[in-house]
Length: 329
Picture 1 (cartoon, rainbow, N blue to C red):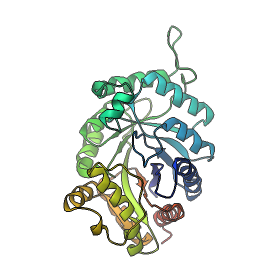
Picture 2: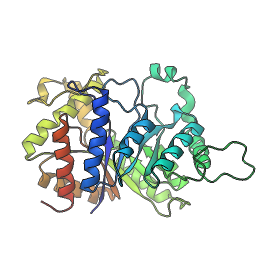
Picture 3: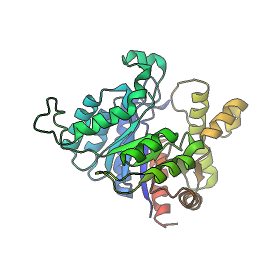
Picture 4: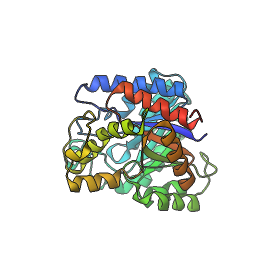
């Protein structure tokens, strides 16, 4: 069975607040642990009313504190927004609190708009230093040398595993050069999935962390008792992407019967392109389509995005997905 993981966005809905979203994320992680998911990651986004995971390291601590074995991490920390030293301190602390369970995925995009970038006192050009920042962060997480004048306490020596996240060839090439595992964001930027995987695998150089390529792909999956119900539940995510295209940053909306009544033709075209790597259906449909995706891509792990409005139905969705991929259907 291929490894299954979850990307958690801590969605704030029209019927919840941020506190409820964060507690739902913790509850989801507890269920995912029982269902056999390998890891759950939290995404860093800023200035978005519908996403409550901006303080990513704090959210990770909240989730890890409510679970026992599942790996918890960042998918990812947008490194241009932060000093590597501070991220090392934060994730080293998490590793000390929850040893052997913390992942640190790193992205090059800001995860926000230009206004928020200015509010964070970060330069838009900070992303140009991403490769050097990754190396600096890696150094702070490694054991400190005797003459090292600045040490990330208590991070030094934790060697928190790093991942490179990407949606283009840049991240693939960097992950290969540094010998790090690579996670591709095909759940919202699927166009470059196959070229990026080929670049990563063909250029990979073994490292102290990883001796052979390891790939993960994000994919939108919503499972329900029937294909029809799953497709209806998926309208919540489709509306979110339509809103993203048109820069409407609102709260997550309940599913509707006909998505065509919500989006314009332009929004539909752009949203469907971003959502091209999506599976909405019954457990049997999910198994068939995910098997085909794995056969096509050869990825080692799937990171599931199951954006269902109702919390109980979302728990049902991730349970069906896990059971389907274990051969229960």
